[in-house]
Image (cartoon, rainbow, N blue to C red; front, side):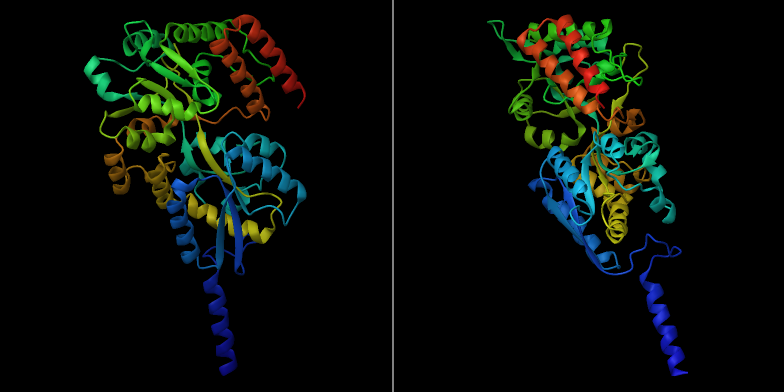
Length: 431
């Protein structure tokens, strides 16, 4: 009898250690330490450590996550590709990636397909919404999960807007009148306050001015229309604004920090940037003026107001061991849970990505401290995945460089865009 009781007790103890789901090949069966490569800099360390420590203490399965800062998104991607090529034992269990990378990583088979894990644990991936699901999928398979999501916005001086009767532009056609009113000049004709600044070090910040008006750097059929009549028209108009002193194309070393400082000092009425820096803008402006945040100008049809997903996702390398993958999935569910999603968004300046968060008391308290975020979250249904062509990032960076030559070095518009179209097509054909 005593032996039978001992066996029954042992069985109960084993059962208490596994999840409430039926046993699957995706369960964590023994203690394990896994590594997470991330790109989160020092200012986020306190909050990152809080989440990791919370998971390590509460997961109940003996999983210990070791976060390792690698560097920028591009540095992580480079090291990840190299580690994946070397095989199991060299890759981490989790990798943070920029939302521009899933297409190429998926094409190369670098990511674990998450659908079986989602099914096994009944994970509510639909809570992210169609756009974010598509942004972290490849070939209709979920290969990552969104957890730090942003989109393109215009930050503006709300105090000046109210005092001077300036309305943020809703369409590209409205930009001209907006810039004329928002720009201030010195007596000698030089610009005292730019109407806006385009973040030219990354095509992502302004590309929707083109996309919402029908211009695509890479079309679905594997061609480009960067030298189309509409592309030339939009490029010529932006060039005109820059030449008039209404705007400038921030490019090169220090462009991002210089643009931000210009805005904080009152030298720019607005800037094109990422919604993830909301806290940064507000904190650095201080009491000087109130910061507003507006959706980017949409299409001239008055109906197209699409933006693109930015920020970061987390993936599990296909080359990791199954035990590492299982533990990584547990951490992935934790990091994208509604509670942690809202905490992480609040502390970083990104916005909540889980639909179930909205309407909660915690979410309303969050909005009471960050009122400008309400309009952006309300437009979240317009956020779309980035172009899924694996060569898109390379092609769009060629476009960015060509625009720099046009805007800052007076290169001829049509000729430069024609040559750009040739280079992009060669890149696409080489895939």
